[in-house]
Length: 283
Image 1 (cartoon, rainbow, N blue to C red):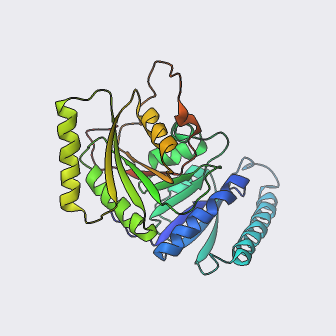
Image 2 (tube, helix red, strand yellow):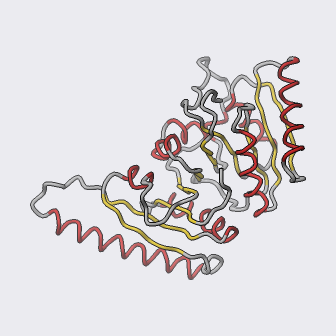
Image 3 (cartoon, rainbow, N blue to C red):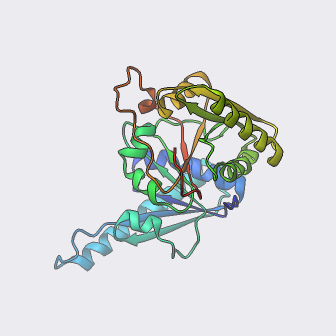
């Protein structure tokens, strides 16, 4: 996985949560030297309307005006005024426009805001961002509406010791270097035994041998579900970014038993989802 970030795609519907997420994209661009491509897609429910072209022209004009206002806000705020920003308007279904591989630019990262009551569950199973997260061939950064800090000082890298996890961690390290972040490599397990201990120590040793980055810690926690384990970490530490790896299989379902305390639904840390290259396993 190439860690170079030259082009960031930022889809927007001009909602408050999209505006809230934009500084995250701009901050990453400032640290990496990337260009931010702000995309708005005009849906076409009126394809066969007699006044279709006139309607399209009117909507397009309004979108351009909103883009002008957005660019002015960036310039007036000042801290990201030097970040290259380009705007794009497309028609059709938003998901198709976001995942389009034949863009005039080749995006290395997608940054999106998430709507409403948001947590890991909501992002993965119940939001418009979920479709992009599940299908994108490039990393996707989902920003909950209550996320505050754009500095990823404390990163949790979740792992199940799959074949692609080491490569994914190398990608995260390159991002961490830009922000001088600390990384915690985190694994949840249903039970602790010799096998889990061997896997934990083996992966830690492999990381230390192959990755030169000092601020990396390792932790394993016994939890009923993966989501509960991550939620516990966020409660204990000032986590500013959660990293998950998506393989070909869907994300695991939440445990069938009702949890008395499922804090994952309320997690407000940004979530970075990386496409994995191990086709045989999942979380």
